[in-house]
Length: 395
Image 1: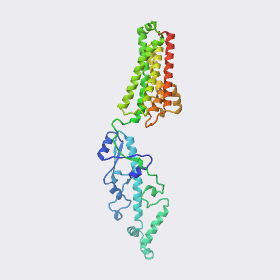
Image 2: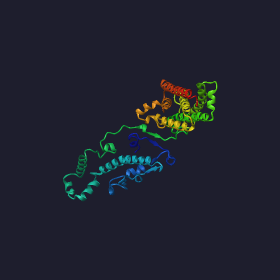
Image 3: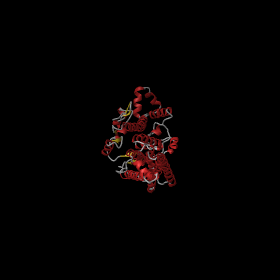
Image 4: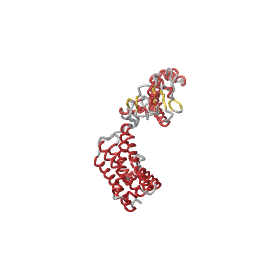
């Protein structure tokens, strides 16, 4: 039974040490279902038979219109009611595997009885003339002939084979020993690590660009209070004024990105990849691009309402287009190319190069290219903000 399961497709078989552990796995939702082979499984499987009476002692008929009655053969499927789809798939796989094991065994047992003395005695009850034939031809010869005739009639099957592949004369699949393993409890900080290799960078990039709203509201508030006009009248240029707003926001964004990366490492067990130091320029360059966009929105929008409308629309649209809201590998290739018009996409590519699950090497030039593009985005946004502020004179 286990051999049939692990040699079928890509099914992974995990051995659980005890029934108590299996029940805990199902109860806690770690597995949608667990198949239990009861102590009487082998003995009941041996008793499965198409025939009964004097031919077989205490035979079991495990079949019904739905397949194999698992309770009859000593198989129990523990199900988690909160995961009905996974449990149903497990039950169906168990049914198919049981059919492939039980049916060849039952057919083989029945076929072996053909031609036996008990079989010939039973046949004589229905064909009394056989007793006359026995005077000319030995009973054993007639029984062997009947058996050979039945086998020849069903030439596409081998009724003596104990396995499904032998019964159907199909080529057996190659043994897949790697599909079977002992269940082991994952480490406390290692559950779902691979998904956080994608989720943490995605949220880090999204949150970095939400700084657009914070910086925009800062500019709008200073406009409303008149402090921005007074600062513009001071003996400082617009570039210095922009720099004074940009640097604190940049520091805040870098700290935010670093905290998110550390939380991913400490709380979710996320790996920093083969070259963790390269995360530093990626976080800094992503923050620079985000802050550049933030000061541009602050220079363009006049009121808090405009910041809310422009900033929220810009942040959400760019996040959706870039792949921050869904894994980039799930996006069509054409959309992935179009997403490169956003700084988010370059930041996500950089994180993907560094944090791809199970990666053993990093293509550093690709990471530096992504950082360079993020820097260009930041410089471009900042330049546009400087032009807008110089034209409008912070009014």
